[in-house]
Length: 299
Length: 281
Image (tube, rainbow over all chains, first blue to last red; front, side, top):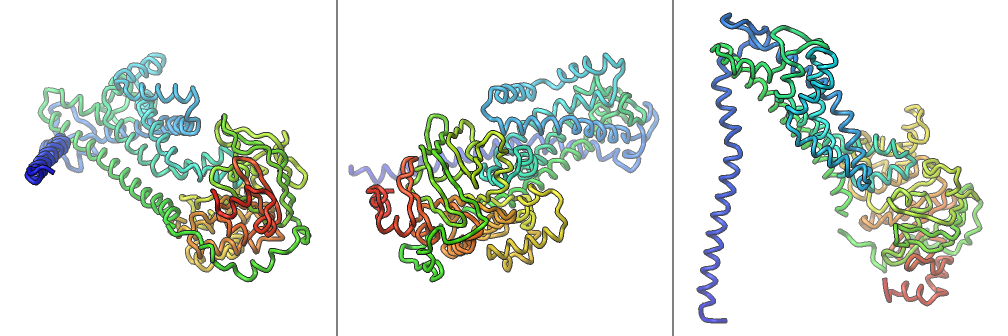
């Protein structure tokens, strides 16, 4: 070894330490910046929205401009109903398609479906709004909660499809074979063993999909349309939180704009709650699966 | 990871005593299994080549051979699990009490209900309680069973595999709370609950510690007479301990099948001798 070896090692070690420190601080900054928008938005919403929050905000209907008070009760109920309709459409279709993709991985049809699901999930949501307008609103001659729910449901389909596929593929093949060997039919194996084992993951993904579409505004503009009145009818225009926020925020009235902040706060709390619930389900799933897999492999 | 019992591990006296019993000495309801000119492949790769093998009723037949010799594939052809793999092909016949399980009018689901199967790794169903795991196969076969009959079956079967005392007070728990050895015995219980007359074991102790291995071997011993057992193992001592007949496979072909003692003491084929004396595999 040359005489300078020791000194050389020293320098490379120092250089590596320096590089490591720089990279660490860079990724640290990236993480911080990643969190920053959410923190700022939440803080801003708390400051702007907390003023209007009160029991009346959740129980009263919107008031005309200039009339004080008023709430977003119809918007909250409308959003919940729209999400219910969306889940009723998106869940069964997404689950079925996801199961198909996972069990028939390499067929041509599966490749096509997988590709189209990815395209669909990348489609701008306003395009889906127009599609549903053509499909339901125009033929029926009116905006409706059903149309809004269908639009959100279509948005959910690719999310749930791909998530179901991923979760089902995590189920060990040995489990599938064990069920078949016990005399389960293919259908029964898929439904009672595979889906059941993957269920916590699918529930998580579904909750996240609901949270994801809960805030969608564009597809509701020409489907659910919105209304200042109380309505839970499927065949009539219905209020929704994102629409109300949109209308209020772009209005020239101060108390309406204040209520837009409040509505946004409620919406974000709803999304937070759904995401938190999804996490809880995932955690319990991880514990169970880990215990089974580790228990089987440890000896 | 613990190892299989060492070569010097002493079999229990009971196991030693019965090695010389003639295969045809027992009259039983268990079926005869006749594998006839069976060839199985995955796409281009032939895993089992023209194998014919007869398993005497109520007896234990072991299949030994180096990794990848096709012993698991052969086993999986018996309950038609082989065909659940994409690109898998089978030709030949598997006669169970004279009936070919590959006949056109035979439903594979029906066949699998009559044949117990335990795989190498424990595979308890994770989203079911221990109790539901035991009766899973029974429920698939007979949908309407009253709770008392199921409970009786759970206790009887768990006692049979020596697991009852360990889990009696936590039947509603997740099987994930059990150790690997307990999980494997639970899988054995699940396979035995529908009272199959033929039991297929695919290296059932490969992932178990010596004590659990011994328990499983003892269980296999107690099944003799009632159940025809076909067991795949890479552990020669295990084959010698538990089986009446041993078949040696190499590269997908059946080299030799004989009474276990005869095969291990005076093998007819030079390749068998080379394998059992540890010169390869």
